[in-house]
Length: 302
Image 1 (cartoon, rainbow, N blue to C red):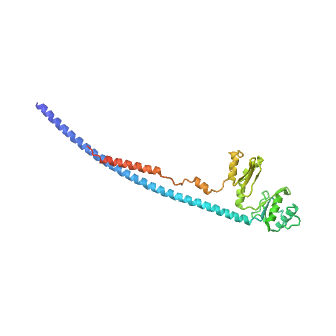
Image 2 (cartoon, one colour):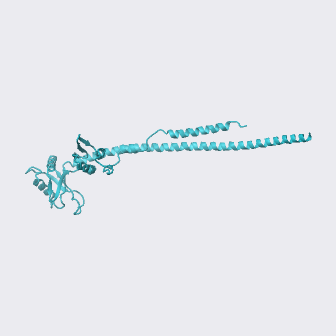
Image 3 (cartoon, rainbow, N blue to C red):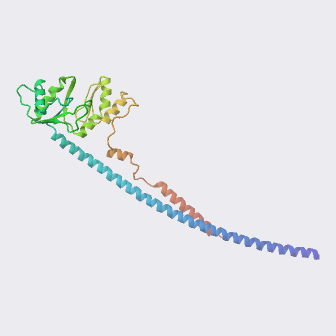
């Protein structure tokens, strides 16, 4: 009996010691868990705050970018309108002018005016005995080219607009040459208009190759299709039509590469005001995680 009593006493003592030791270890473990949860909670709060700050900064940047984009778009529209007005004023100042292309350098002699008057009379571009009333005539304001380079054009200013129009109509009806050089007569376009007309070069070549009749009034193009004439306001519009009709190969490089417009800016700009739903979802997810962590910390532990 003494042995059983001793064993029971030892067993009881062992259980109590073990229970106390496990209780102490669980208490220590609880303290560590609480500390880690508290640290995690602080980190979540810090991350949530940083996320909100980042979202606010991004919103500010995108707001600024959207405003800047709108301001740039307005500036492009105003610039385009002002450029159109300048071109119109310059074109009006040149309405009595005519250009003659292909005259060899030096063929005009000492007086460009006398040379032009003689050319008009010899080619019967104006009624006999009629004074063309040329006010000024000179070579284009560019350095004298090399002998093998194309000659500079001759700019002629007439007193009367109707005289210039009559001469141009008559010149376009016939072939005029000086030696082996063919001369061409045309309006005195502004630099901007000349550049826009050059954009039709590849289109003209493709149409001529296929025998399609066309006209280029000012900066537009009229193409006479079998279905009827069609007017195009830009080289880009005409080029798209030719590619659609397979008259321009897909491998041919576009000749139209004008400056960016307000419409292109609005279409290509990534700065559009949209709902920030993805950021809102991220903030909500962080908030729910923090609430679950706080709820877990409030639960009593055995």
